[in-house]
Image (tube, rainbow, N blue to C red; front, side):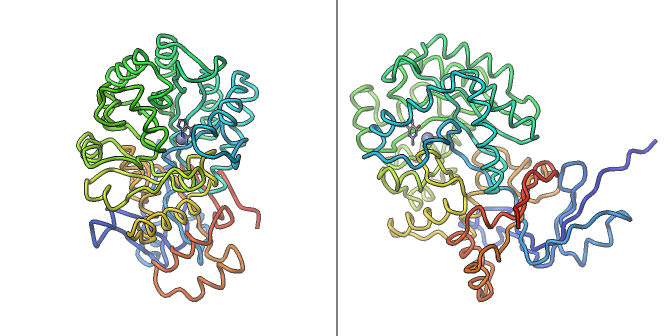
Length: 436
Ligand code: GUN
Ligand code: ZN
C-alpha cells in the first residue's frame, strides 16, 4: 500500500537565502511569480511557478497569495516570555529596570497556571508577527519551562527555551542554589531536549547573578550535553560591565568570564555583545558562538550600539533578536527598523536583504539549525510566512513605487509590523491568519 503524501502549494513571490548577502553576491533567490510546494510538513520545492506547477500531483490545492511574499518564518534569537506583561516599563537603565520591574514580574511564574496563560499569549503574539522559532528565557522556576514547552508543543512549534539559573544578587524569591539550579536544569534537559521540536537552552541569566560555583556547574552541564543550547547576556550596559569586573577581577573581559567556565561553544548564544573588544569578537568567532543583537532593547534601555562592522570583520555568527521585555516590539520587522538605525549611528549600513537574512537563514546558522529551518530549501521544515506589501495604506502607496526587491524589503522593514504578516505556517500548518 502506498501512502500518498499530504501536498499543498502556495503561489506568491518567494524570497529565500543560501548565503550571507554581506559576503556573497548570489546569496538569495527571488521568484517574482513563485510556487512553494509543501509535503508532509516539509518543503518539497520552491521556484518559478512556470517551471513547477506542472509537477504538482493532480488535485493539489494551490493557495493563491499572488501580490504577497513568502519567506522562511522569522527566528528571534533572544526573548524573555515572562516579561511579556512588563514590556514598555520605564527605568533609567538595565540594572534599575531589572530591580523594579523584571524580578517582581518573574516571581509570578512560580504558579504554573499563570505561566501557562502567559505562554499562550506570548506564542499568539510571536505567530502574529511571523516568528516561528525563538530562543526563549523562562524564569528560575522549572514549572515555567514545563508550561512553555507544553504550550509550544501543542501548537507543533520549533522552540528553544530554558530555566534561568541565578543564585546571587537577586531577590530571595528568585534565588536558586548552584546545586538546585544544575539539578533542575538537567531534569529539564532530559524532559524536553529534542522532545518533538523542543530543544533546551542552559540559561545562566548573566555573570552577576551566578556564583562561581553556579558558573562551574552550568559550564559542566554545557560540556556534558554538547548539543543543548546555552544562552546568557554579555556586555550589554557599561554599569553592568563594571560590576562584572568587580565580581570577577581575574577575568580579562566580561566575555572571558564565560570562556573561563567553558561556555563558549557552538549553540552558545550571547545577548547584546555591545561592549566587546577585538579579542572577545575573535573568541566568539573561533568558538562558533553567536551574538544575539537586540536593537530595540539597546535603544530603549540606553545600553549602547552594536557594532555590525567589527562583528563582520571578526567573522562572528550573529542574529537579530527582540529581547522583549527590554525590547519594545515582538516584531522582527520593527527590530530590523531599529537595527538599520543603530548601524547608521555606528557609521555602517545594513541593507534590507541583510536584515532579512539575519532574521532567517543567518539566525538559523547562528543556532546551527540551517538545514532544518531558516530558508525555503527542499527538505527544510515548512515554517514560513506570508508578507503583505499592501498591509497598510501607507505601505501600499510606498511599495507601489519601489523599484527593486531591496527597496520593497526596506519599506517592509521600516514601515511594517504585525499588520504585514498575512499568515504564518509551522511545519506546513497554518498557525496564524491575519484578520483582513
Ligand atoms: N541582563 C540580565 N537579565 C536581563 C534581562 O532580563 N534583560 C536584559 N535586557 N538584560 C538582562
Ligand atoms: Zn535578555
